[in-house]
Image 1 (cartoon, rainbow, N blue to C red):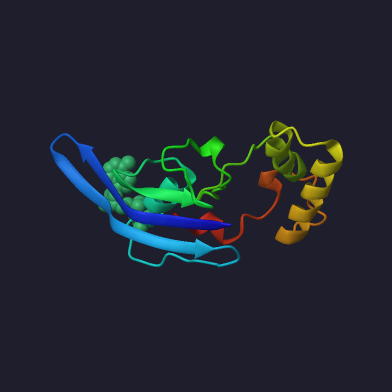
Image 2 (image 1 turned 180 degrees about the horizontal axis):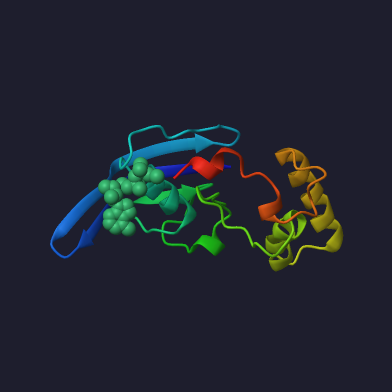
Length: 146
Ligand SMILES: Nc1ncnc2c1ncn2[C@@H]1O[C@H](COP(=O)(O)OP(=O)(O)O)[C@@H](O)[C@H]1O
Ligand SMILES: [Mg+2]
């Protein structure tokens, strides 16, 4: 798995104001690499992530996933997930049901769903909290981040 951003620009236009949110950004990430964007507020971190996930289209430049041009693919057509800063969970569903939701949409078998749910529960350290709703568990430091 590899992700490549090639000469990415994002310019937001409203009326006669132009904001250059991302200015000629290139990056190559290989499978297993952990990458962090660090920079002052407004430098284009979120816009870059949104373009990788498909929620924004670059004004210019290309995005490749495993060599395939995904620049104009919608979010549901790319094999990429985005965890939002303010999380989007279904408040009326339990932790387990929230995890299952996307897997059911993908039409995975019951067995596969069960395996994946338990893998994710273990990975996130949420063992024992599967049947609670989001408002019944601590949001951790997310509560104070904006
Ligand atoms: N939808 C938008 N319309 C207009 N300007 C935007 C939009 N989204 C972000 N921007 C502007 O683009 C720049 C980069 O924003 P952003 O990617 O959110 O930065 P960061 O996540 O690094 O704080 C900022 O100047 C911001 O105001
Ligand atoms: Mg941001």
